[in-house]
Length: 226
Image (cartoon, rainbow, N blue to C red; front, side, top):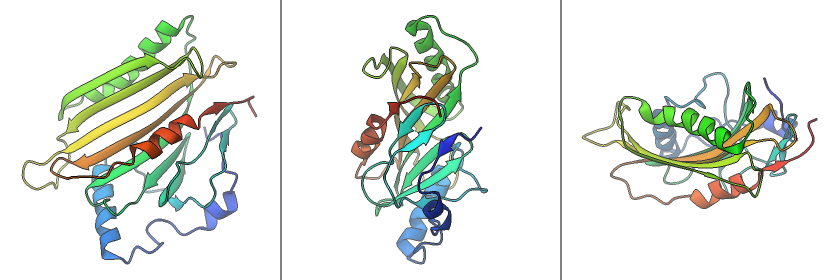
């Protein structure tokens, strides 16, 4: 179900995609090849939808009662995919590093009578990512984020992904993810999963844009359903 309202719809639809906007530069082409490789198994990878440059930074509203603002900084691209808003940054270091952010609407089937049960639900759902073959040296943490809602969980994960083919030698991809999984304070069946994820080659020295991911998380607000 697609409930997000892109307030700059005309700009979003008519802008050139990431592949079309200056992709003749060889460095950018290499960056896109790397991004395609390490995101090939990710849920935001889609042949049916392209990323478009973020032209306006006003909040994006969900009809379920959530609002987020695109990440700060330059060179962010946006995609509306089903129930998610996805942002990808194309930086100079994108041949060895990628960061993406996502805000995904969740319609809860079960009602949770207390925050502890909700935390266990989030933990079980997120730990599935760490149980796949080829995932090594994983770590995870889950804590309450009461400043937003008593039904709000902050999660952090890190692991090595050895599943990706096409990497030379014994290299793998280091993955770090942080996010907030929150139930709406007023609507028991409406939730949002907002996160950012960094991926980099194991032998690369990178410049992290984690701060921009954290700003994206902090932009989450609740409002009445539309």
